[in-house]
Image 1 (cartoon, rainbow, N blue to C red):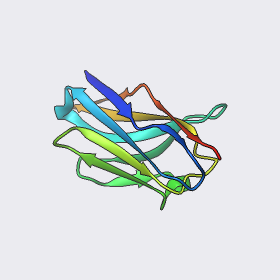
Image 2 (cartoon, rainbow, N blue to C red):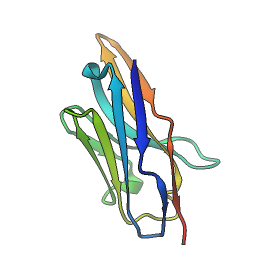
Image 3 (cartoon, rainbow, N blue to C red):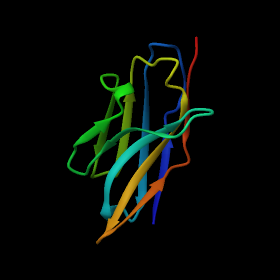
Length: 119
């Protein structure tokens, strides 16, 4: 099992920055991809960014150039640096970790942290 604990959410003005962090514990040795999803009120959950164990990252088009995902494998942490936040960014942001064993993959989810953009 893997447990994920997020931190760093909060409220920021448009154009501001926030950094989200997520720490994994438990069976971290077979975590491969880690990432961040978000779900705004009344909308479907969407992938924000994901990073492999080797450091390759993918981003949603809406956050490219503004958000950066990073990972520290030695600490089993993943972070999301968000800048130039816009009114479309507020959501509950959840950390994910994909645990792989042979041909099986299981995605673990954090409890989510709220990001608000308000002037």
